[in-house]
Image 1: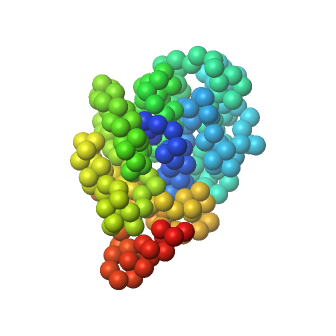
Image 2: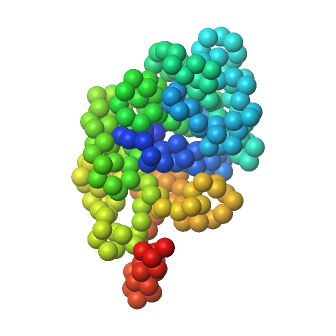
Image 3: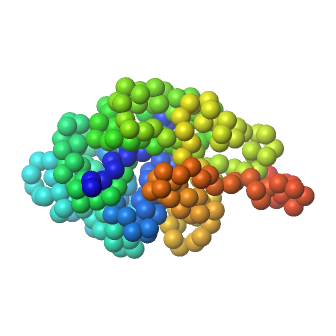
Length: 259
């Protein structure tokens, strides 16, 4: 069995795509899956920073492509999750042209030894996006409930259709349950209907999203559900509105607005 190669992409920056990729990789690794987090965002190249392993990076994907090291030498093992390996993008010369075929060749070579390869893509639909998608077989499109984010996500989804991927699923990040209950933003199901792709998971707006296993907030429960959906082909969705319904929920909504 070879790894499922999943590109994690978005129409615009600022939707938490890289943080989502890192947390999903950590959750899958905690479940016993062998995971590579591959940074294909050669412009920002910060998946190693988000994972806290930037000082352990000695080689990057370009070193592998140009023969200065083997692919396994470029992988950095996460200190908390030994099943999670990080492959950094081009740190030395981010403007250097790297072909989609070269990236795919490296990831295909790693695939037999892993269960998942999560590919962090640049936002938008420029050349870096195509380089990342060309190496994948599945896609997760990350958006937030904001209209500008949805418009850009729709553009990305249209382009992804030309790649004939096995699946293209939706993950909605930074969801506020209080605003859904008050009708101030679209619900996740409404967003899925508008974008016309299946909803795989939602992540609530939660400060613990950056902290991995250090705290067990709503975001970490949502990542556990999302990872379980990927593993088991289920469609369970984290409930962001439950605590904001009813009498006590109305008090929580009022307090949230005043923060």
